[in-house]
Image (cartoon, rainbow, N blue to C red):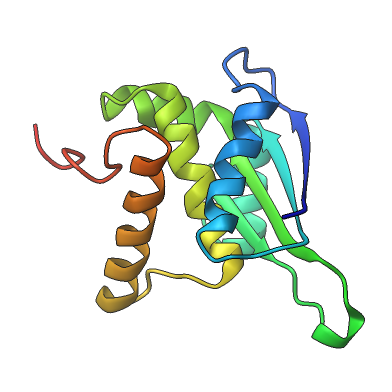
Length: 155
């Protein structure tokens, strides 16, 4: 299975996971759908840039954890590009702390979640959300982390 994962950081965070870990998490999501020969680009940003991008592309004027930009390229072009993910490191770090999660587990979840969006999964309606969350949970547990949705709303 040949995947190309390009990672670029424009973040000042000192807590960004190792590139090998980021690649492992993306690979797990891609392998869950038996995808071969795909390319995913990861761009890690800080809050100001994250807010600008979220505002520009989603009309929401605040930084969010991960943005997914699926490639909209006709199949006949034959490019392996699946799409781009933008991860706002400070938001991921803050959420992990607020949710009492290990930082690596939350990073893994955000990258798996974003990659599944690139593949075509969504959570707009309850049925889609249930399917996507189930798959995310399976992948995250397979990576050795706790289920990502447990205890989020519990105090």
